[in-house]
Image 1 (tube, helix red, strand yellow):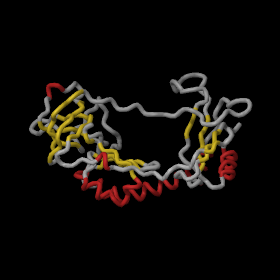
Image 2: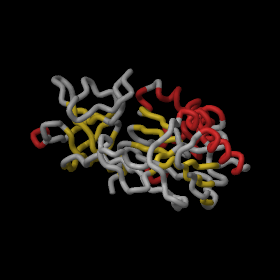
Image 3: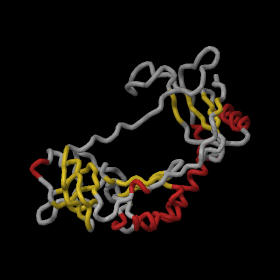
Image 4: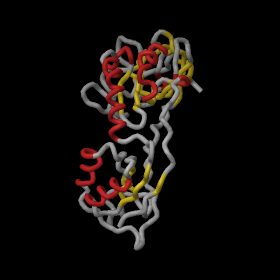
Length: 275
């Protein structure tokens, strides 16, 4: 069974101003993170940068040895740090040193968001139970026609799923977002490859997987050389409608270096102007 296609309004061209995230010398900034205390050196406030060669963000239970990205601290009350060494710090940033004026418990990381809803009406007879082999569907979308589709999403018609080990397994529906001009051809290709439940959503004007990959490569041409110098503070790049660039702080100098690709990126600095 296949859900009836649903037409969504055209997606606007993605743009985002980074002006509100700019940090200049002397600004009051704040962030949550880990404070590293090592003998013989100033306390250091660690950005959530992946450890070199690992590609993963350090967890609260495994403190990093050496803070690859961050800022030195002055005025910290180390006696107020909890056992995991994390804190929310506010202070004045001058010449790469954060002069702490306030400290509090670290803010928890935001819970990952997941849209489990099916944006299509159920077909006659309802959604089926069971999930056929979907390897052919993934090959079609990601390997053969990334210019026709966007990222696949699994939705749950019976409501938000619980434990992955629950039995019976919840019913699932693949949400296939189509950007191809010939929606009919894109839908037929999916039906030829996958016998399970599908909800088609038409998004004219939205970026396809191929568009997102081209944007990512264009941004990487600019950002990769900057990442080789830790002084620039860029530590992670990930694709999407806007390419997310994670960094210690978005300074005017760094924004100028990113200027050629600013319309393609979403800047995500760790140190931000205090609110």
